[in-house]
Amino acid sequence: LMGAMGGDSPQGIVHYEQAVQTSKQGGDLRAQARSLVELARLQSKLRNRPAATKCWEEALNIRRLYGDQSAVKTCLTELCTLHEQIDDFGLTVELAHELREVAAATRDGEREAVAWSMIARGEAGSGNLGQAEEALVNCIAKCGEIEGSEVADLLTADSHDKLGQLLRVQGRHEEADREEAEAQRVKRQAGLNVVSEKEVKINGERPHRSA
Image (cartoon, one colour):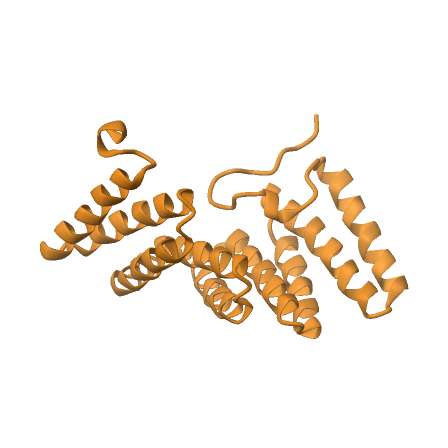
C-alpha cells in the first residue's frame, strides 16, 4: 500500500496532505491529527525539518483540544528534539517544561525524566549552567523513583556524565570526578553498553545491555 502511495517520497507527502485536508473538511480532528503525525514523520525522513515542525505543531494543537495526553507527550517530545537540533534552546526548554508537567499529571515517570534531560540540554545550550545543573539533579532524582527501567538507567548514567562536564567547566573538579565515577558505576551495574541518552529513541527503542 505504501508503495502505491509513494512511501517515503514526495508522492507520499501528497497522499498525507490530501488525507489531512479530507479529514479537516469532514471535521474529524482525530483523523486529521493522525495524518499530520504521519506527514511529520515523512517530512523528517526527507529532511524537511521546517515542514515536519509545522505538522507536529498542528497535531499538538489538535491533540490538546481533545485531551489525548499520550499523543500530546509524543508531539512535545518530537518538537523538543526538532528545536534542539536547530539550536532553538529557549523553545526547547519551554516545550520540555510542558512535557514534564503532562508527564507528571499522567504519572509517566520515564517521560518526566526525559523532559528533565531535555530541559538540561536546552538550558546548557543557552548558557544557563545553574539551571542545567538543577535539571540534571532532578532527572537523576526522578530516575531513582523508577524501578526496572532501562531508559531510567541510561538517563541516570547520562545525567551524571553531563553533570560532571558542567562541573568541570566551572572548575569544580572534585565534584566532577565524583559524578563521572558515579556514571561509570551506574553503567556497570545496569550492564549498559551505550554512552549517551541521545542514542535511545524514547518512543520505542531501548538501550542495549551487554550480555
